Length: 337
Ligand code: PEP
Ligand code: MN
Image (cartoon, rainbow, N blue to C red; front, side):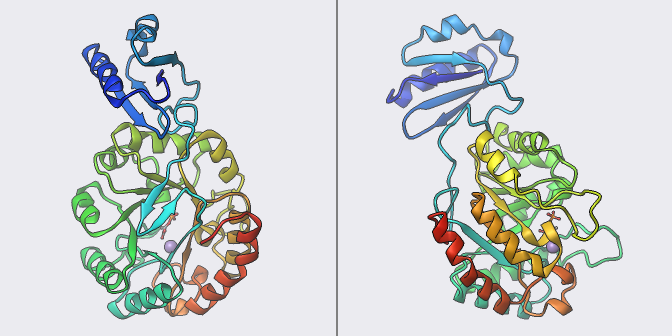
């Protein structure tokens, strides 16, 4: 259920309703919009007496949310959620460009990456310190030292960072050292991790699971919001299908569909989505054309020497050329980087 307050009612009135819901053993989640406040009610909704709440001052209506996810639903909040990171307003008319190597490998590799990307105007640097690898003998990431290198290189060039959190036990450390915490595709349904990420305020980049439906994807985001963190950025990174020519099948229809269903921003990862250098530019263009709020691309100073995902990383020069080639598409959809 959601309780929609009348436009322009003071926040104090919503606070009274929140208090009353709590007294009745329900879990209210107030969402303060620009125009009006909406209070989502979680818990056993049978306890909610609709008539009673509809009669309270400031309440416009009490209504059911039809989808299984409530807080991420557009029915609950119609205005888009905008998440600001290092001056980039993700979810606004601006397209967020996030780039960097798959993994943190060395100080030198990260320094070159950060320097080159900042020179191109990029504001958010990606790189994994904890890597979810299919096999246990593959490079697993530099761990804590990787986080330090990522932060040092980003600080040197005024970049914000995004990195994957693999293990709930690392939450404090990762949250302290990075600006956006990534939940990788393989952890999209790690519900305990999602719940913990609800207890922090830093933005979470939630990647779609390899075999997750869009409903499951949105329900995973719902976990984070339901536990208190409204700052979730969704990321379509391709799903596993019978197709073998591409690493995954980049399901771009997710973007406009999620825009119909949810107020959360959604970006696209054409690197993992295709696994092929040559497909990164065309799929980034397509992502922008279909309404994505941003893209995240793997860029490595020497892709052929990369310790992970070597086949899909592009050089800074290739990335720079791609940024140039995106301009007509950005202009066509009336957006900027
Ligand atoms: C990554 O971003 O490097 C990564 C491992 O992504 P995904 O979880 O989408 O495979
Ligand atoms: Mn990767």
